[in-house]
Image (tube, rainbow over the protein chains, first blue to last red):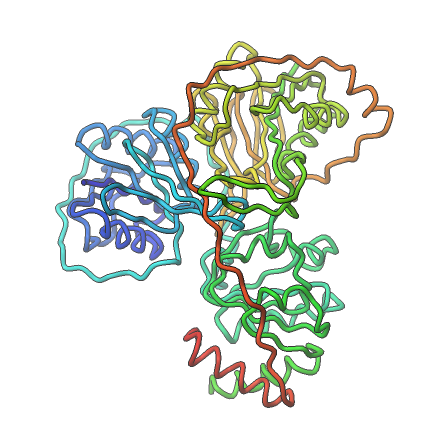
Length: 304
Length: 248
């Protein structure tokens, strides 16, 4: 089975999350080709072939480039990363190639036939889908290790002329030097139990010490304490960090919908009956104003 | 006048309890509601209508013939609606997009709006595929939009960046929370919506192309509450993060 993996880059470097997709794809395929939207700054080990356009393509043109590449060879499936850009590209490919498309895939299973596993109902159920025909498969990232490889690919650069109907007026990086919520290994979140906007500083301090991203419950987003982009939950972000620390979050169903795939959860809440304790692995029943300064001090001491 | 289509989906509410039974979906409790993200889509369409004038059509696809969410959209301000009733449940976004495309291709919408994803299957794909089938420009995850003549300027939020695009109409956008605060329909509007035009289209689908075998997930057993003085708890927590979770 030969796979075509697509990776979109804004600077010619392939993000770590895409290396994970490549590594995971090799579990089910002997031959993987990588197609990108611009020439790369460095080669990517582990793939058999890299196909790039000679210049830089925007998302819409990249989709057409992938389409052309896919038609030229006998690929079994197109594989990519299940992020927003990946989903837009995959939707275009699904329509134009007339092939099925499944995203948010957590696992591949390849015995007699290929089965992909993903969540439904925002993590309440798991679903197994048998893939019987050429498809586009988008994988969740931050879920699998990256295995090193010595395979050195051949690189093919192709001329490709394309004009886009969309004009990008501006692009602003919003995460700064903080890790983005979606891909951070650790996320520290705060809820209404923080009592005031100023107390969100505790969340930020703890996150900084742990190298974590910061999140929030809907309650404090609606109160205007933090921007909406911080919201974790049903109408916010659905995340799967290795560790989620919930401070002053009671654990409404809508919030839990965002963290069902967190591998470990630590909850800090002064109410011993808060529903979050049913879902957490470890709980601390404490007033955060007294407990967090102690924890923060110890972590600071460790850093030195 | 600007013609806007809004795609809405009836979904099980967040509190619904579901499980699997021999691989099939079993709903233990729960009610159908308008997909929360689609409420932002309806609201945005109504705001455009109030600002520059527009005719809004709400569109929904299901197999149970349910029209409540279309009535709700009309109570919020949509002018008319189309219910596409399929003979079977369909999960495949490609299949759904093809069916919707077939039904609405002659409507010549200038703008189609939908929510960023449905909270039942979390695919965020049907509307984007539809857009491509119709040959429309599209941008997903929109937090702000402005129509200027035959162009639309949209701001969207990615995982790590914020982008602003300009594109020609016809176009499709999917919207996210934060773009507006959806209104509650007034009682007179709710009453009025019951008599408003709703066109039913029945479609034979020849089955789904994505078949899902559902499985329950392991239940969490509850947190181990750490006890002792705050100083001791902090030490325990650091040790857990270091030695058990291996994250620091």
